[in-house]
Picture 1 (tube, protein in one colour):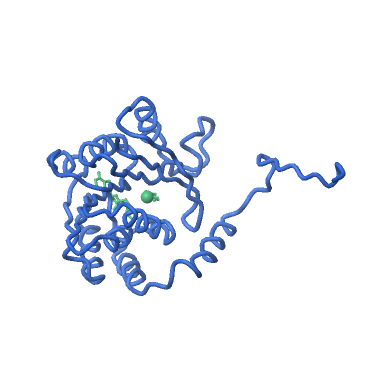
Picture 2 (tube, helix red, strand yellow):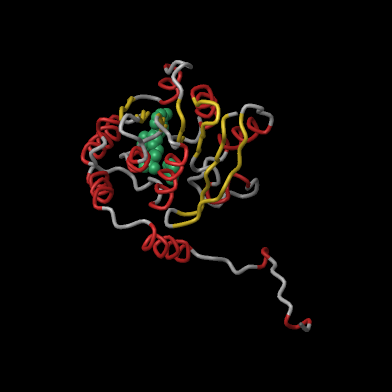
Length: 238
Ligand code: SAH
Ligand code: DHB
Ligand code: MG
């Protein structure tokens, strides 16, 4: 092969992609892998009707959480921040007959919509909600109650504290997932802020704490798609 034919991949010089590329990509893969879902669609419609923000995980992320819960054979799941129950529905679908999910949600209206949606999805009996600030609710959970999986997706200031509490109640070998740890790249950006909505400090505190934490092994994987550029922190409780 002559030099002119040699292709050297330089990642830093790849052309920028646009939101349209991420959205089309999600749509294309989902058309094969994540079928149309009238139950989830009805839940989203109910959330919209009640004025809830459109900040649930994307469909592909929801399916990822479902697959993860199945892989773990999870019987007990805790979710911090349920909104209208979109991710809750995905997670609860992975539970066996005797499985249970505990949803912690600050806003009574969000929990009410989530409960309606889970009931309409036929999952009402597997899911319990506690309304109030999640940190206080988490602290009420005895250490002897062990969860297989925790999904943290509430406010970002308290992410590090939620993680500490999750660690306390997740079993050895269990998994803790934290949403929104990338925030369009702002968590690692110490220059001028480009996304006004970003609140990176809580996530920075979290990863600094994990750095020297012998009780977990963790990584961050970016999530790029129809819900923007963000990321999941994935941790295993040792
Ligand atoms: N997990 C949901 C999205 C959650 S959005 C999904 O993917 O479908 C974030 C949620 O966290 C909102 O419903 C918000 O009311 C809730 N929240 C914010 N602060 C909170 C707190 N201190 N305690 C519990 N929930 C909180
Ligand atoms: C927001 C919160 C989320 O959990 C999310 O995934 C996206 C956005 C928000 O508060 O803006
Ligand atoms: Mg989120």
